[in-house]
Image (cartoon, rainbow, N blue to C red; front, side, top):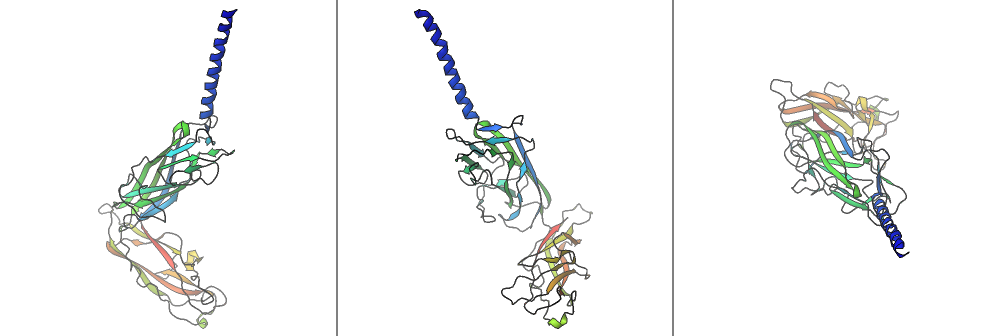
Length: 363
């Protein structure tokens, strides 16, 4: 009877050992799962639009910013859960080289050491992530050292809610890191990829954008009169809605203008975009009519607005790119006129000021 007993116990011990190893392996791998039938890799790409940068902008200047949001091209679904034994981690290193120079904060954010070079000379990009990489909820990664790329973090809180990783959220800031060639420059660059937990490399993210270096220099005294003085008037000068004062001319001068068009071809056209600031908002954008700035107390005039006109007295629309003229080599002058317009049945005396911001572009 002794020999059969030894023969019986040996396979039982071996079977139990194999079962224990299989369970431990499955538990470690199961905290980040691809959805049923889901692809097992994610590529993200986003076209962030067109940006203009002044030719004389300093190194470190913000060229433009855009939202990162996009879902992955494959429609893949990846979800992670907290694991107290084996921490669920994320590592999103830069795949584009980091700019080696020193940069000041941009938009209030420290960017030094985290701006990636793009395929366009002189243009870098800073990527700042939000959910689920910002520790804002239990089902997120808590960052080790900020939310910018290159990034690392781990899930630190128990949660019954899975963390979805099918989309990327955050902001991209394009920053001048050197001389930029004239004309439209097309960015098409993979900037980071991602390693999630025990799954290894699971994603990459590509940015696309067009950056145009402005053909002219915009100097501090570009506006002929700043502020443009529209004159002093009595409430009796306004006889009803639509009544206006004489239009006062002013101009914006663009200096050192050059063109990169093919020799003999038409030069670039100059466009301008006008929008209210300091409390001035459009009353009738198509007619170039906007409100006065917000005045403290009751000192501000009421019942009137300001209208911007072209040099031929036609309305200058607001909040849209407006064609002005073909670029003049050297100096390009943009002529305008401005006047007060009664907008309400009753006009109240007081200080009447308005403010506009302008953006010049070239096409």
